[in-house]
Length: 348
Ligand SMILES: NC(=O)c1ccc[n+]([C@@H]2O[C@H](COP(=O)([O-])OP(=O)(O)OC[C@H]3O[C@@H](n4cnc5c(N)ncnc54)[C@H](O)[C@@H]3O)[C@@H](O)[C@H]2O)c1
Ligand SMILES: [Zn+2]
Ligand SMILES: [Zn+2]
Image (tube, rainbow, N blue to C red; front, side, top):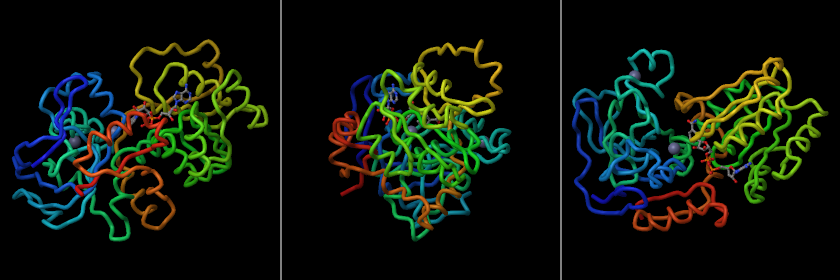
């Protein structure tokens, strides 16, 4: 088969590799019908993720068809259309049992293993460990191009942003960063009845998208970003401030926007320490949350997509075939210049 193989910082190629095969009785093999690229894949290509070594097949998001099942697999059979999520889980370890498979001990202490610790989904076929507890059947009414965004970005915005931030009916919510993850938070704040959703970004195209995705207001980053947002909240600040960029300054912005008693939900992956003004924050009765997505909200999100409440397909702006993997990466890497959000990649 062919797959996208990482060969060290800055190097990748779509090349011939051995077919994915069953290794453990709990595995299945999935033929990949749709995949996509995540910002994390770009981090890997920059050499930021040391655990990813030469020869690793990249990708941690897929929708596909089961082609082979291990002897212990009972929940899936050849021909089933399935969603392969970013997180793999055994379902039994202490973390899985408390609904936190992001730290599944059985698969290595971190549930994100595809395109990281084992071969990933940017390939014609992929081996899926712990298939019974990790895969999701895709309902007939949900298309591959909708389901693919439930593998990572939608659950991330929803779980690490909206749920961790405890958005409640009537709340005013700010989302700093309107990329795929911030837009996913915007798309799902409505499920909890937010009355005002303010998108904040440096990029005009992303802000236009945010308004299409359900934001009520858009604020372009400038010298008075915080004051501009506070002015939209009757001077009070927001109930929930979601950070979806991953820089010290954006977390500081998110923290400056929250009103007393509110929540700051950090989603961004940070690469450097951040100094928070605790001398001002301690007295504000605010909460700060952070974490790796668990993807446990996928069943909920699948139902909301199936019923039309979440238009997940809006996330896909560009289409490519497997043979155009390099072009897909180029467009995604220069997403702002290409008016791109997520790319949809299919066999042909
Ligand atoms: N916690 C998790 O489990 C998890 C999972 C997936 C992704 N992430 C992280 O979430 C973050 C967002 O991911 P994404 O895929 O949407 O990334 P992205 O690059 O597509 O989006 C980031 C957005 O932030 C905007 N931005 C950049 N600088 C800004 C600034 N100073 N102020 C306001 N906006 C600014 C960009 O224009 C862009 O629209 C990343 O840090 C990613 O690594 C976290
Ligand atoms: Zn990802
Ligand atoms: Zn586990």
